[in-house]
Length: 431
Image 1 (cartoon, rainbow, N blue to C red):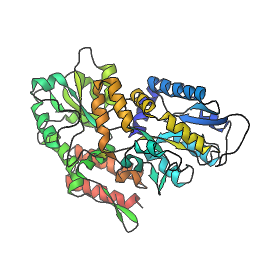
Image 2 (image 1 turned 120 degrees about the vertical axis):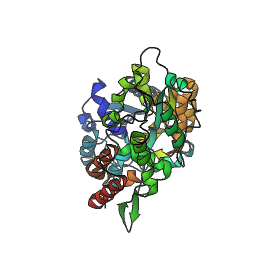
Image 3 (image 1 turned 135 degrees about the vertical axis):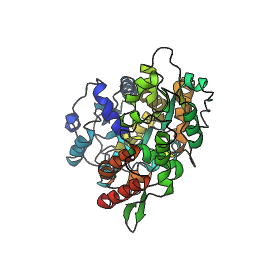
Image 4 (image 1 turned 90 degrees about the vertical axis):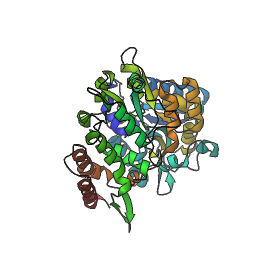
C-alpha cells in the first residue's frame, strides 16, 4: 500500500537523499543504556520525502534538540525505494539507526529476526491510549509491539461535485458514507453517453481488493493446522463481483481505467469523463495541486458493506534492538508523535493520523476543508487484516492474485475460476 505509493512517486519528489551509509558512521551498538559524558546521541532515519512533510520532520527534530540538550537527535534522510535492503544490511552489521521510520507491513520480518525492540513498556499509557488497539495490532508481532503506528492511508471516493449536483446525487456526511448498494446505484445515475459514474483504477488490484473485502468480513487467508490456506467464499467474492458488475452488467464503470493507476485517471476525471474515483485518501493532494481552476471536487467517506472496515498499513517508528538508548529513543518518539506534532506530520503527507486527539486537532486546524473531515473520520474502522500477517503473501500477490484479478476484471475468467486460481496459488507459496 504505502510502500507502493512511495515507490511510484519518489522519483518525482526531487528530494536530495543522503546515502544511508551515514547509518554506519557512528553506530551505538548494544541494547542497554550506558553512561557516557555529554548528551545522549540518537540517530533518526526518516523516510519523509514530500516538501511539506520533509520540512515538518526536520523542524520537529530541531525543536526537540533545542528543548532537550541532554538528548540530541541526528536526522538521517532515507529513501523508500532502497530502505529495505539498506536496513537489512545495517541491522545485520549492528549499525542501524536508533529510531527507524518504515511501515507496519514491512517491519514484521525485522521484528521476527530480533532487530527491533519491544516498545510496549517504554511508552506511557496515555500515549498508547490515543491509538486504537486494532491499529496497534498492525505493528505487533509474536506478542511484541515493535513499531509505533502514526500515519494511515484509507480508501475513500473523490467525486466531481458539479456532476453529482446535475444528477441529483447528494453528498453524504463525513461520518456516514454510502452503502455499496447506494454507491452502485449512484454510479448508474452518473452514467450517460460520454460519462461513466466511476473509474476503478485497477492496474494493481490485489491490495485494493484485500482492503475492501473487509467490508464484508472477507479474509481470504485462514489458519489450518499450523499452516495458512486461501479460501474464497461468499464474503471474499462480494467486492470483486460488485466491481465486475459495474464494469459489465450496469456498465457504470469505465473499462479503460482497468489498466490505470490512480494518477492515470486524473485527466479523464478533470475532463468530466468519470464522475467518481475510488482511491487513497492521499489522492486529495493531487486534487489540490492539479485540478483546473474552478473545479469543484468533494471527498466521500469509505463505502460500507457489513461495515466500513479496511486494512490498516500505517507508517511506523521503531527502536533498534541494538540501540544503547532505547528509553531515550522512545521518549523522543512519544514527543515527536504528540497530538499536535502528529497532526502536522499527517497534514504534510495528506494521510490520516492514528491518534484520536491528533485527528481532532487536524480537523480543527483545517476546518475540515479539502476532505480532512472525511479523512479523519475514515480512520475509525482501520484495522489489521489477515493478509498482513501471512508469510508468503507478497509472492502470492505477485505470482497469482494480481494476474488472476486482472483477468477477472477484464472479463476473461469467471468468478469461480478466479477463486480457483487464488486457492491454488495459496497452495503453492503459503506456509
